[in-house]
Length: 113
Image 1: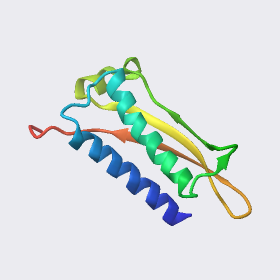
Image 2: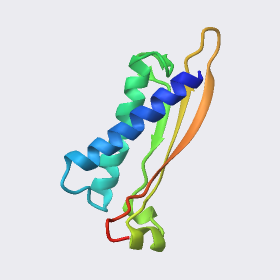
Image 3: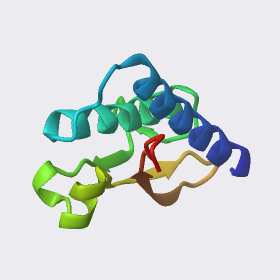
Image 4: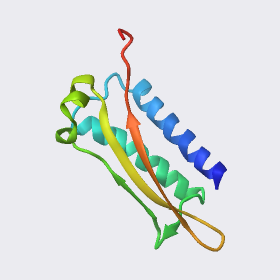
């Protein structure tokens, strides 16, 4: 299970890095938040396909909660920090499942800081 967790973490990190490298801009609005959230969902779907996250009835046993721009605090907005994207997934086990929870915190630091 530890290796599965590392694989998911590595995949999330790569997807988020690629998102910001491949796009000239990830806007600080609902569209940008959805772009970031979509990468979390992609990672979850790959974890389902790789047998890390349980599949029930053809769907992955996970939930991802993507915040809206209006959920950002004044400080987060001023610093362009996306509010936490939370997720919960049931890890596939040989005889049982384990529910894990995570929180994705995204913060980009400009080259001026």
